[in-house]
Image 1 (cartoon, each protein chain N blue to C red):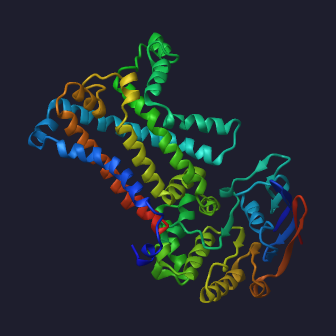
Image 2 (image 1 turned 30 degrees about the horizontal axis):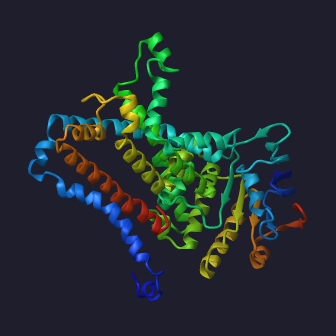
Image 3 (image 1 turned 90 degrees about the vertical axis):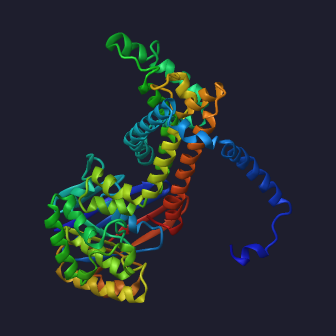
Length: 270
Length: 223
């Protein structure tokens, strides 16, 4: 803060309203920290149900993030660089899961890939493959709600990218894939890191679509958020411990973003 | 060998009509007001934009023919382009920037780096190979940008306001270097510039873009 910023009068009462907002956000988070049963924190955390939920969450959210990168990046590129019929509608549908209630996403996935679903019935009748209520379903549910974040961030990054960089690369002899991987992506590293972090955080926190489409079976589809919910229903204090863990993870992601991404943006480059 | 452009491009209500010929050894300055389509002309030659109508032909090879559906991708045109601020790859060192085009065209890494190092030396930048672009001055960055382009031995050289972003020292440095490059470069050079002294000192011929504004903006570039 410089002195300059304080010498001009602020709108009257603005500090009070700002404080209300801050307190409403801070209080519940503080309450979790205050009530975490620190005495048996580690024993709760190392219990079999907790560790299996954590490993499952880490594994599925990691796979989801990789799938989001491999498929979301080409979609973002296409939306940014190619014109095609009904493009604005395609774009709207691709990001719809961001604003859709996750439980609706779960219902939609069930009617697409469930045993009686549009695609699911074919998979089951012809190949005896069932997706719903398996670990694949948990990944698919996370992918459905999380990949739009990746697409939105990367599409805008591609649109803002300096055409002279890719132009220089192409005239120097680089084919399109080489230009994308060796020039475009490195030049938009801050956005890429942000997109990955947001996608992963969203996948890790997925609840509504997962419980609807993948179910809540411990060890198989019971991810951390589902375990928290189950623990809360049983009125044990594991919910507090696991919530604290998720808060710590989310907070770490934010800090990482501030350091790596926001910091880089402020310096005006990679 | 001749570069021949008889083409036009439409972008919204902006229409650029080009009828241009440049011979080997010619340094053709393209002048005209801002937004008249000078950079667009270079992008058309490089293959970063496509003609709406007409043709671009170099040395008998059709780069772009809208009617015939011919469009040669930029990596196959052997056209070098240097932008105003160099457009160096920020995550690569000066040496890696110069080696980029060789690597892209299939040269082995060691050989590409060795050739790039020789190129840097000949541009008096031999001791800056490990520097990242942001650690270099504007004039040094343009040296790297020129070296990066010329190491791939382009048949045509395009320069888009190569000294406009530089301070006085960098400008003198880059102009001296360009004059030196022109003496050994055998193909046609298209130079977009705003600066009269630069054009007078370097250009062998001048083409002007004339702009007529009514409901549409019609720009005409001929020589």
